[in-house]
Length: 155
Image (tube, rainbow, N blue to C red; front, side):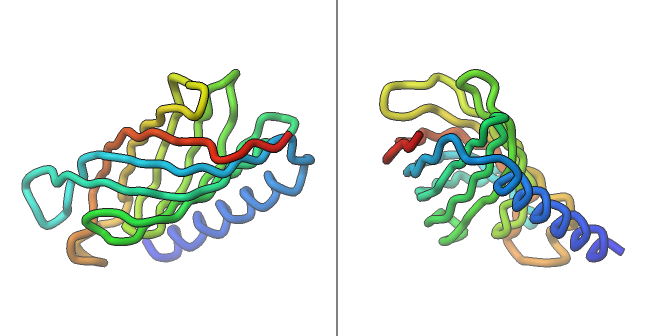
C-alpha cells in the first residue's frame, strides 16, 4: 500500500514538474553551487547527526514565477545526494517543495537574505516512509541551512 501511494505521488510530482517547465516560456535560468550544513535525525540512532553537502544545480523560472529546480552533489554522511522540486517565487523569495531521492525525503525549502552573488536557503525534510524498513542509516528528518552562489543568470 505504501509503495503504491509513494509511486503515485512520485509520478504525479514528475508530471507536474514537466508541465511547469513546458507550459510557460522560461524567463530566467540560473546555475548555482550550494553548500549546506545541517542535522539529520537518523532512524537507527537516538541522537541528531551532523551533515554537510556541496551541490551543483539549475533553477528555471517561468513568466508566472513558477520554479523548477534540480541539484546533485556530494554529501556527508550519505556520500551522494540530490533534489528535484517545484515552487513559486514571491518577490525575491523562492519557496520550493520537492523530493530528495537519496536519502529519501520530502522537503520544503525557502530562500532568504539575497546578496549580490547569491542567497541563503533553509530547508526542512521529512521521510514519510518507515525509514527502518527500507535502508539502514536512513533519515527520519533533516534540517539545514546553506548558501547558494549564482554561477550565471540568463534572462
